[in-house]
Length: 305
Ligand SMILES: [Ca+2]
Ligand SMILES: [Ca+2]
Ligand SMILES: [Ca+2]
Ligand SMILES: [Ca+2]
Image 1 (tube, rainbow, N blue to C red):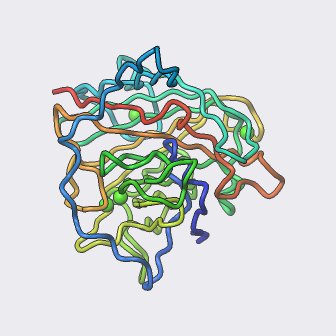
Image 2: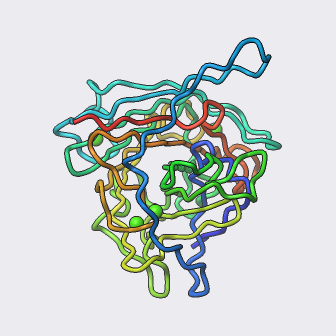
């Protein structure tokens, strides 16, 4: 329904992680075709930070934030985080993208795998707002993964230069059109008639890609599929009640899509997170109104066997 193209900023979004950005991608038949598959990046290790020479006065390079994704049995995608109790957590603050005023949010990220699927748990401290008839009056989430390791964390570009792509990113963009605890995507829904395969018609948990902040589409390459699945919940599901949003997600390591990140045991993968708060205005959020993890650069996720 309201799949709008997220505009630029998202970039940022994803940017931060965010990249995720947003909105559902365009699904019109005139959409941009996914570029031919390039060599998967998954095997490439994320670049390591080097020590800047102190004598030059160059800004010191920050150490990348790293999180291990271990083999964990028994995680069920149902919006209940209890099955993640023993998984290491990365706490972080999501901040507004450049030129946008949005309240920062405390959040946490956990990543695990079961040998075949990568699973992500993102929790965000924010009050409950959910409107089944208007996703802009509900929270929304974006997760971004680099496909090309050179890709910028602003949807493939950078926050400073949002029009110049440095590579392709995989975007999981979730507008909460289905109620808490309902599995969105996965085998439960497919694209609507005339839509690209990455479009999740039922619950709007779309599998997308982008190369810069203006070039974002639902997965639309040859044989594109959408096995991305997720379920959400809130700890206090009463309007405007403070609490914790839980977003629980899963996706196969290798979907075969050139517009998806391929996960391999032993690889390092670059991730970013974005979140939209509907309280940003009486009409809810717009594409650019998000906070994201970009401030810490790409989060490096090591897939541990
Ligand atoms: Ca669960
Ligand atoms: Ca809020
Ligand atoms: Ca994708
Ligand atoms: Ca896909």
